[in-house]
Length: 332
Image (tube, rainbow, N blue to C red; front, side):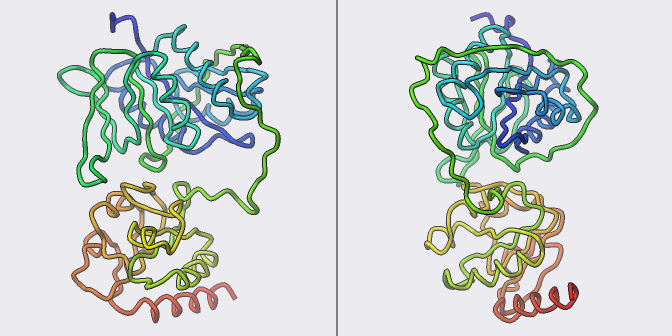
């Protein structure tokens, strides 16, 4: 393989319900940093049945161009259709690297695309860089249950493909994209092996902890699942969501979709309130980039206090109810 025939950094932009998911915009910011080193063109790739509105949402985030692919078979996500389209696009344009969000859909089709291309894929990355010696993308991800961080290079094949966790990078507007390439594509119906009959939406807003601006998290100190209702009340008053440490999830107190840390979601909220969380290194890696961190713990030597902007040493079962009453009084 002649690697010189492959140029450009691609970011796949996922969407749902007519709205671009935040992770794609985060990856555009990360890709711009890679572009500053490699000098390659940065392309945002969006696939849908109609892309006009999605393109306008992507424009402010600094891609050199937007590749907008209209396909009538892509009104809803389909493993077969999206795999085929991205595979064909890569064969046509030959990018050097492709970044995909590590969402349910991204984790579904990105490995299939890599397999068809006979290239490597690094999954669930938490950091990106450029290797000084080879110029390859340096994909960093947790290994051995989050106890080690591994940096992986794809030196022999192209394109280099990786999925990156939501919340690792911040989405930042960086100039309006003027160059938009519109493509019309179709996928033979016979190649799509599954059909969506009905979409059943959960009541309320979709839960995406990585996009939350306020998170109230509980750990082992919560002592049981019944006590998370207290955190939910505080989160509701603040307009936030409930998070959790791995210890709380492993204990079965709360669903894994709430987990923050290397083996959960990486988050960057404006406010992170840690209740009864000691601060294992895996948890700190997932939330230490929060704008403001408030820690509540009985142990004054808990590691969480090393990253907290404000620390409250005491019984969370006294402090959290007091906070709830104070917020209610302020909102009255």
